[in-house]
Image (cartoon, rainbow, N blue to C red; front, side):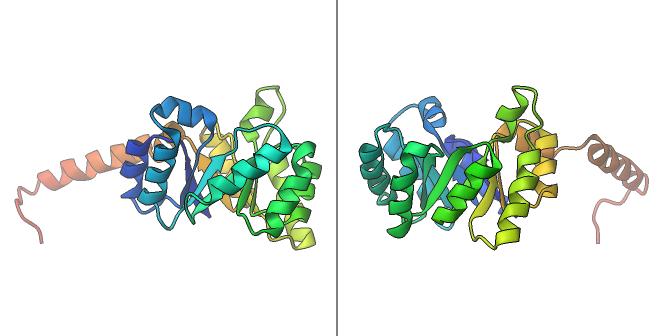
Length: 219
């Protein structure tokens, strides 16, 4: 399973890169606006930090023809970029055209099994179901992960399942249990997920017992 960071914070990406656990990054217009500065420069810096990773960069144009041109331009920025395009019916012909031209895509804002099926049929690289936004309207968002996993496996599609809009540790756990190919996680959720009180207590206990021996060097 791949782990992506859901951020455009270059310093945090650099910090987590050193763990060897990060396989890519998902950005969006909101992340890039928070990062400030020149978005193009930020994207290129992230791509350079993770040259073997997969970096998602979202279109900002709205009209289909403009989306197509922008997608092509974004793809040319770096070989490891995945162009993010919203899963809207108006963009289906554009997504189909880009797929035939072998532009790598991560289709975002997927909410239903049928939306996922449409994108798999078009042959995109990833679909990103948004778990947390379902929860925002009191619907269990993880259900769609299980549905999409079953559909992809049942019909032998090659599209990857990328669990997105992860709001907490529970969502992270469910994304793993559902068999997602990728989970993209905010820094705050990743930090919380990798901490555990019992681990900290265990370290303190072992350290206290070892000090009783009075040994300064080991082995």
